[in-house]
Length: 269
Image 1: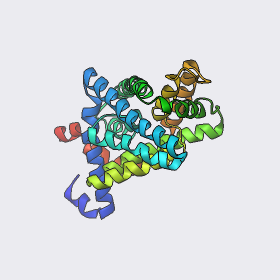
Image 2: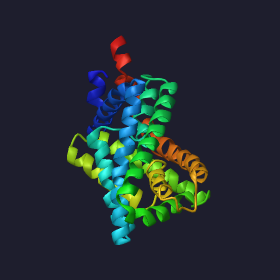
Image 3: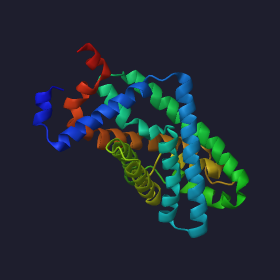
C-alpha cells in the first residue's frame, strides 16, 4: 500500500488493513502445512474441545443450567487459543481470506477442511471415550445431551441453529485477529463459548463430541448412522454461517487490502 493511500485512510480503515495483513500472514503457512502437521493439529483440536465438553457435561449434570454449562465449555476454546491447535470451523475466515488474496488455492482449502474436520472427530472420539470411562456418573447426561442434537430434526429452525453456530465461531476468529491483547482474545473465547454452547447453537465438532460421549455409554436412542446424517446437516449450516454470513461480509470490506497483504504480491513488487 502506498504512503498516499495510508494518509487517506482513517483509523478504522488502517485497523482493517492491519487485520487483513495478519490474517493472510497466518493463513499462508496454515494452508501449506504438511500432512503430518495438519493431522497433529486437528487431533489436538479435537482433544482440546473434548476438555471443554467434559467441563460442560459436569456442570450441566450438577446445576442443570445450560448457560453455566456454556461458560464451563469456554475452557475448550481457551485451550484452542493458547495451545495453537485447530478447530474445523476456525478454518473459515483466515483460510478463505488467504485464498481470495491469491496466496493459496481452493484445493488447499478443501484439503485443510477435510483433514482438520476428520482429525477433530477422531481426537474427540478417543477423548470422550476416556471421559465416559473415568466419570460414569456423566453417562446419563451425555446420552440425553447427544440425543438433543442428533434427534433434533432437519428443519429450517435447526438449520438456522447450525448457520448461527458457524457464524458465531467465525466471529470469534475475527475478534481474535482484531485484537493484539491476549486478554481481549480470551474474553472473545469465553463470550463465544457462552453463546455457542449456552444457547444450544449447532456446531459440527462440539456437538459431535457430545454425541460421541453418549454413544460410548451404549444406551442411546441414536446410532452412528443417525449421527452421520446429523453431521452433514450441521456441517452445511456451519459453512453457510461461517463463510456467507460472517466471512463474506468482512471480505467485502477488506478486499482492497487483501491483495496488498499477499506475500507473493509483495515479493513480486
